[in-house]
Image (cartoon, rainbow, N blue to C red; front, top):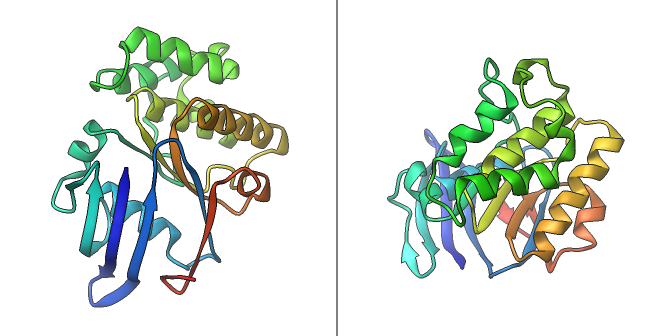
Length: 211
């Protein structure tokens, strides 16, 4: 589904990724590990089309997409949840979700809305709460739910369990494993070993290179 060959990424003249090659197949859970600064976030941003300048080949369903803008990649079925979540903090939970529902994804917007509330029942109790008044873990749930509203076939997740309460980590982990069982492919940058234990493959980045 996703095939990457010889990917290099640059911030100005500084090179952050070196000849990265990877693939993610239909329904696979692939975990990306590495120390802070190893290039995990850079790699995910390069795949969705934001951030670094890139060289190399990124193919989606056999089609080269390295020249596509981020919104076109999202419309094609790539979903991205950034580490900083990037929510519309002045809008309610419902509005954050419904804005994303307008993207043409799999299923109707109403069906996708009910699906994400089923995955994250905690959100159902705070639909009218501004995102700015949520805890970090609740915001992470909302960020993931909002991306799921676009009906992605592949999720790119940047440290989804970082810095949130253990009880919410468990809820997020369970939701991700349920999505994996439903056949949603995922490439997850995450140090949480519980996710890695369920992955088809675990990749390790060291200094911008896949070890």
